[in-house]
Length: 250
Picture 1: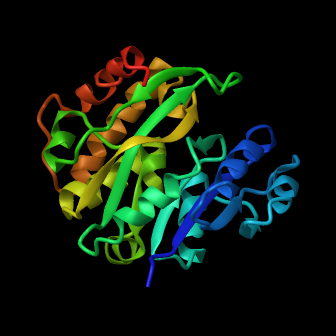
Picture 2: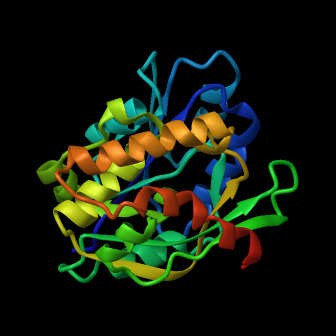
């Protein structure tokens, strides 16, 4: 029996970007269970979501931020494999989920990830940065590496065993989750060598120097939370590693 895929999209006043996100999912050759967790939007977000027949569930109510919404989505979902797609991101081609499904045919694989392209917020056809992930080795985390979270797919059983997002890590919650799963618990992972997601340029943790320093502190706390000891330079290499993304454009 083939693995079923659940996809979680958290939204809040996402009307300007959501249509492209949902269109990229509706065009997938492998149809997922797509769950929209909305934070009580006041714009047309929910109406846009309702206009896409492939969307299976929409929950619109106040929440405690994007990672709380993601946790709600995971708890609501029923698929064997769970992925997260942000409302301002979209899949690079119609075969992304088919590639994911093929990976998980191997029962020994717990997770997978791929490459991500940052695109201009208006001209989404123009790549501004390229995040080439590379083959998996948990030791790479010690050198500032992490996989792009929007490309990260995990078996439901992993969440059930090791937990979901911890809300006290702010914008570093996805980093803490992947550190916990891939380094602390050593779940297996496979790299898909292709661009899976296109993400509009920007992001809370990179918006200013102050936010980047705050994120760096939370990154260090994530290691401490999981009883792991990074190298002295580990969390400083994490933002430095992004420099190559501006050089590599696909």
